[in-house]
Amino acid sequence: MKLLLEEDGDRDERTAAFAAAVHAFHGDIAELLLMAGADASQCAPDELLSLREAVESGSPALVDALLDSSIRGRYPASELMEMRSLARRWHEAGAEAELRLRTGSPCDPVRTMVQDDEYYTVGELTLGGVTVRDGHGAILTGLEEVLGVRASCEELITRALDRDQNHTAWGRSAIVLSHRREQETWAAAETLRADADPSRRLFAAELMRLFELFADSHDEEFRVLAVAALTDWSAEEMDSTVLAAVLNGLYSNAGPRAEAALLAHVGHHDVEVRQAVAAGLGTYLDSTHLSDEAREALLTLMSDPDTDVRIVACCSAGEARDPALTDAMAALLDEPERRVQLVAVYGLALHNDERCVEGADRLGQPRPGFRSEEMACLDVAWRYQWRRDDS
Image (cartoon, rainbow, N blue to C red):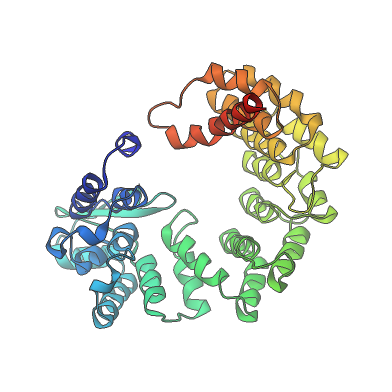
């Protein structure tokens, strides 16, 4: 599919592929085609599934595809309210119970986890030849957003914590709550932060990270509260998964306290924690240079045993525009891992370092199937070369 999307197909072809993907219950592919230029409004209603079929399928991505802005007006508010009730019934009963009711089968369903969209997974259950996904809670949240129906803070948290952090229900509830810039939501996050259950603390960390990410200004009240809370929290959290989420919330935060919180975990045993440190260092919005301590930390992380840590550290080093890091990035051009070479080229280009051109030449054109990811790095080097040659 990635290869198909990278080809220069016309809009009509992608629109036809969108209709086929929806009809085949492939919501993830349908969403990719929409992002690639498919026009859902050119599909007749009988070319697509009904909204009811999509809701009952339990795939949030499939419902989202049918609620694309270009065709959302096809569904009157009464139908959307009916679909909200349908999603709630499936969510409250549970996908397995509804599946048993529909099939009448006494057997246990076959369960797997599947990728439902670009970012999240859902559970998939098959019984008696019928397959459904367990994303009805996320579908319910999405329909409420479309309808302007405000679910309670408690209910949204419950929907999220019914699933794990990779499930669409978790991510969708967190995003909805983080856009509520109000004391009730902040108090809920603080309560979850103090919970003994790591999964509840993890959701609190995600909420606070999103408070910071979606803030309208650098000094917005809840952004300031979130940064202060995450900074204090990072010194006491013992669960590695939660700690990584806490440190990810300090991304792009100027200030010595946030930097000190990140630096305290440079040598942490957990890879995800070190990745979070590497991502946060050198990306401060109000700083054009690194402290000596942050520079040394990035140099350490750029030689980390884990490939992904080295990649993230090199990206941060490039964005920091600190000339003391250019030689370290250039050394990564000789790494055997192509992904590391790509970010080294990217970082050197941001530093206007001549060595990015040779690195890009050695890498050649983007590989089929990885065009968008690799172009993001190579294009920066090519632009540097064009500017150099023009001058």
